[in-house]
Image (cartoon, rainbow, N blue to C red; front, side, top):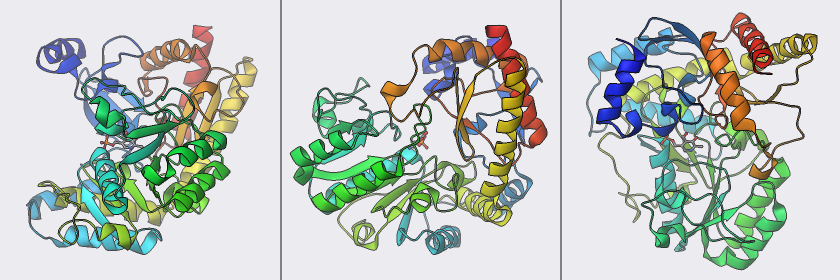
Amino acid sequence: MNSADLFQRSLVVSPGGVHSPVRSFRSVGGNPIFFAKSQGAYIESVEGKRYLDFCMSFGPMLLGHRDPEVTEAVHRAVDTAWALGTCEPYSLELSEWLIERLPFVDKIRFVSSGTEAVMSALRVARGARGRSLILKFSGCYHGHVDSLLVRAGSGLAGIGSSDSAGVSAATAAETLVCPLDNEAELENIFNMYGSQIAAAIIEPLPANYGLLIQRPEFLQRLQALCRKHGSLLILDEVISGFRVGLTGMAGLLGLDPDLVCYGKIMGGGFNVGAYGGKREWMDLVAPLGPVYQAGTLSANPVGMIAGLVTLKKIERLNAWGEIEQRAKRFEQFFADAQSKHNLHISVVRQGSLFWLLPNPQGPIRQLTDIPEGLAGWYKGIFHQLLNAGIYLPPSAYEVGFLSMAHTDSELERLALGLVDAARECS
Ligand code: PLP
C-alpha cells in the first residue's frame, strides 16, 4: 500500500479524493499522504514513515493522539455503552461538568459536529428574536452552514453573496458581513440593520484564515451593540473552546455571550458538538419550546465519555499553563536559531494555536492585513518540512496546533526544521 496508489483510487470514488477539502493538499500542491496510525505527537503514513504532527486533526487533540486515558475510556464505552437514541447518564455527567465551569452556559444541547452546533444556535437566535438577519465577520469560518458560507460583502454594510455554489441568493442575503477589527463598520451595520439582526456570530479568536487575534475592545463593542439592538451574541468557540483556557475566549475576555458553540476538544476526538447558553434562549429548544432540533447520533456515549475524560484530564494537568510554558521556550529557542542565520519567520500565537508568516509583521487582525505571497512562501516551507518528517497543516491559512504530547524536544525539532526549510527556500 502506498499513498500515491490510494489517492488514485480515492479520486475515483470521492470528490477530489477526500472527505473534506483541505485534506487534498490543493493549496500546497502535491498529493496527500495517507496515514494509518497515530500516537502522541506523531502520525504514521501507510508507507511506515513517522511524522511529527502539528496539524493534530485540526484541533480536537489537545492531549495528543490516542491519549492512554482517553483510549481506555473509549474501549470501556464501546464495550458497555454503545447505544443511541435513548436517555443515558453520560451526556448528563458531561453537561453538569460543563455547566459548573462555564458561567455563561445554563443549559447545553449536544449535537454531532461544530457545523451542526452553529446551525442550531442560529435557529435558536432567529426563533428567539423573530428576526432573520445574521451578522458574521469576514474570514471567520463557522462550518459549512449555508447562510454562513459568505465572507465578503461589497460596500460598507454589505449583504453577502455566497462563496459556495448551491447556496440560494435568498439564503445568502440573510447574512451581513463586517470586517474584523473595525468598530466604525460595525456601528454602521447595526445602525442600518440593527432591528433586523437576530444574532451576531463571531469566532472570538478567529483561527480559520490565519490567526487573527482581535483587540478585546472590538469584541466588547460587538457585545454592547448586540445588547443595545436586542440581537443575540453567539460566540463560536469550536476551536478556541477548552483550548485557550477552561472557559475559552469568553472567559479570558470576560464576555457574556447569549449562546456559545463548541466542538473539537469537547469530543476527545469523536463526533461531538454542542451549543449552549442562557436558559431564556435554550428553553426555546424542542421538546420544551418551539425551535426544533434533533439528532439520531446526538450525545453518542463514546463521544460523551471520551469528551469528559479528555476535559477532566486537561483540567487536572492544567494543560493550558503547561503548553504556554513550552510554547514560550519554543519561541525563545526559535528566535535564537533564526538569529544565527539572519532569518525572520514570525510566529503569531495564542496559547496552543500558531500561524507562520515569512517576515516580522505588525498585528494582523483582518484579511486585508495578511501579506501577499504568503501561500507561495508557505508551500515551500510545508514541503521542506514534510520531507523532514514534520507535518504542518496543508494550507498557509490554517493554524498549527500544539498539544500536551509536544515536549520541548519536539518543539526544538520544529524550530530547527523551520530554520532549515527557510534556508533551503531562500
Ligand atoms: N466553527 C469553527 C470556528 C470551526 O473552526 C469549525 C471547523 O473547523 C466549525 C465551526 C465546524 O466544525 P465541524 O468541522 O466539526 O463541523
